[in-house]
Length: 230
Ligand code: NI
Image 1 (cartoon, helix red, strand yellow):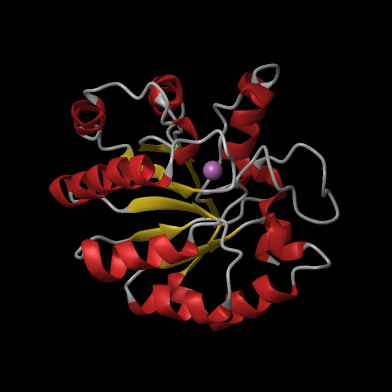
Image 2: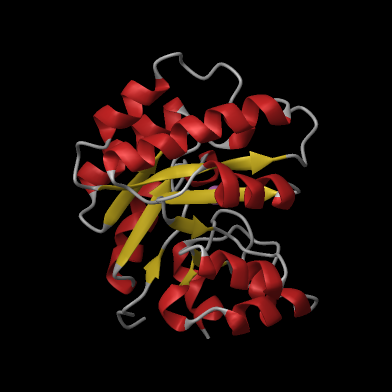
């Protein structure tokens, strides 16, 4: 496949689903894409991704704690993020956010407290964030309209309404769409993508999840991103 001037802005290449073929797969991805941002979810993944950025010039990192991975977060997580962020290949804090879908996640109050600390780090380090919101639209909008200003980032794997997408653009955010944009039932998501200005619109795989049509249900990787781009 010819080289595409595309970035995969959200790929979890450190995921265990790539353990068997990561070393063969990643060099191939570098042949076809301009760059890949790999967001972390916890301590182990931050460390793993920092090694990947050393190994591959086209891989960049986001460091942070995902809302599903807050149990056992180290007490010095802010120092750790600040330390990794000294590396110029760290381009964002992420993946951070709120996830009220899984009942085993930490309660909303705990999630919000850690989120605000990670957003504060974005300010201190002058880095954007990569945001995950699942079933937490109300609290997400409230935090960004009332509690914290002066930070910018991307709402990853957007599946909300067109109205909320407009609101995010107004707040200075980028909005990123994954392979779920290509699913047959994705009417609302397509409507939302249509209202996001092109200079605020990003695409991603969120691999190994959310493979685009016609590969829906398979393990996803960055080589399938052109389906979403189309
Ligand atoms: Ni993700």
